Length: 283
Ligand SMILES: Cc1ncc(C[n+]2csc(CCOP(=O)(O)OP(=O)(O)O)c2C)c(N)n1
Image (cartoon, rainbow, N blue to C red; front, side, top):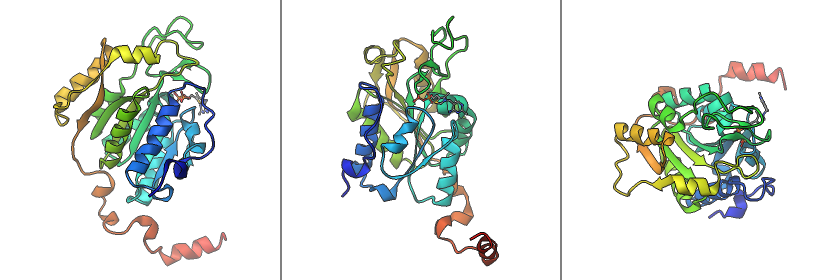
């Protein structure tokens, strides 16, 4: 049985008080509780404070280009579809730079657990407005307030075909661990949008702000009701918004639709000998 220490890499460099600390601990705890060890799971990271977790989490890992964590994860999943693949990325990384990849991964129901550190700012580059920042948000890149409306990650994932859509808060680690575990167990595209205070550069979306503006879904909430889930997602623009799994249904995932992936994984299939000869020329 693995322990949190087995999953611990270098000491994180996040600011003291940053919500990323709780997400880091929650991911490791969830992996331990699911019975994984570092060699039985892969995590793919984007660029940003969130992506820096590449150095802090010990398991198979890949640090992708900005906005490209999801396509790299899709490639890894297709190469070894029996390996659980997590994506750890920021709201700028996956709703901004990588927004196109995000929506197409939802469409394909790729079996990934996408954990977004949603702090409404570009943290690593010290505080420009990110896609989830509310209209009018003043930052060094938007001194007169951001003009665009915010991306609604939950509605985006739902309408593009994600089969597991959830929201958690970095200030509530037990619920975050529980949701991550459910998301990893789910077969298909899982979004965990984590509301993550950035204490250095976002003075609006603080721990207090999220405590005041969030509520937990009831135990009897029906997770397979698409219209109800859309209503819950639309509450992101209202006074109070939900925490919990707002949608979960079964639908074949991308690799499950590929007959050539029936049985053994690609990485274990015998290679075509002609290909081996070609490779030999380069080694
Ligand atoms: C192609 C490219 N464009 C811009 C950058 C500069 N850059 C590095 S991190 C970052 C913002 C990351 O923001 P987010 O994804 O929200 O992550 P956070 O740091 O807030 O966790 C940007 C714009 C880059 N590294 N590569």
